[in-house]
Amino acid sequence: MIGNLKERVAIVTGAGQGIGEGIAKVFAAAGAKIVVATRTKENGQQTVDEITASGGDAILIQTDVEKQEQIDAMVVQTVAHYGRLDIAIHNAAVFPMHSVESLPADVLDSTLSINLKAAFWLAQAAIPHFRKQGGGRLIYTSSVTGPTVAMPLTAHYAASKAGMNGFIKTAAIELARENITVNGVEPGYILTKAMSLLADGEALQEMASMIPKGKLGKPEDIANTMLFLASDEAAYITGQTIVVDGGSTLPESPVLMQQFYHSSGNRTT
Picture 1 (tube, rainbow, N blue to C red):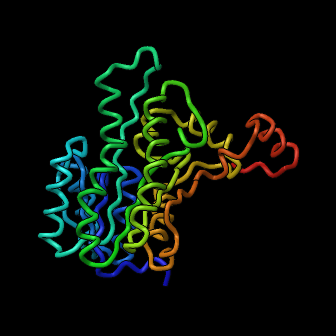
Picture 2: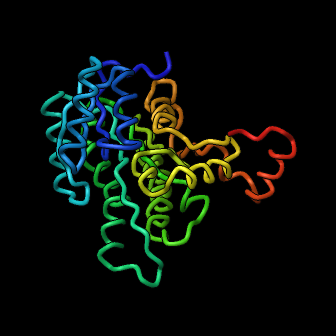
């Protein structure tokens, strides 16, 4: 059965909302014991409560991934509570919007720490535990922004995600002989509470019309891809990122794409 994670222990950073919440719930439904690692206690506890109410096993470890010592402590607490660690997922990220010219130094530092440095710190904390038990999975939420496409006002975010993809490839080579795989997922436009607060219904509909699938993705679309990467069936996959974007990065011209779907009668709403 693909995605059977019974008795495995998974850390999910940024699991209090959005994509991280979706990952935590999908992995819990597959049998994993979940550590919800999030900076905001209220959001994280809600995720834990919903998982346990559905019969899953989850705990909250309040963690600010911008601080390496808190990541280290979170991994120690995880192993102390569950006795092992099998899967470490770095999903937490920030997305402040600034032009290159006006980008404050503290925003650049914070973005790189949360989005990219924490990827290193979580790996460094998890690897010794993976090694003791003969293997493990490191999985990262990257993005199409940076590795594949660009967007104004997001150079710092794009740089962090492009850097993450480079990290994934190199770490995968270093750890391959120890049965530790390192992979990532590159989401496109995913409908989360945060996105719905940034754009009204009309704007979201316009965004969806630019995507070949004709709709925004769901957190579960990312979670299900990660579930495969965490499974035994993906044991021979490492150093890869999978784009999950409904085809949004495929068209050379979104305008021509819309004209095609409209004229051919295949437009999806």
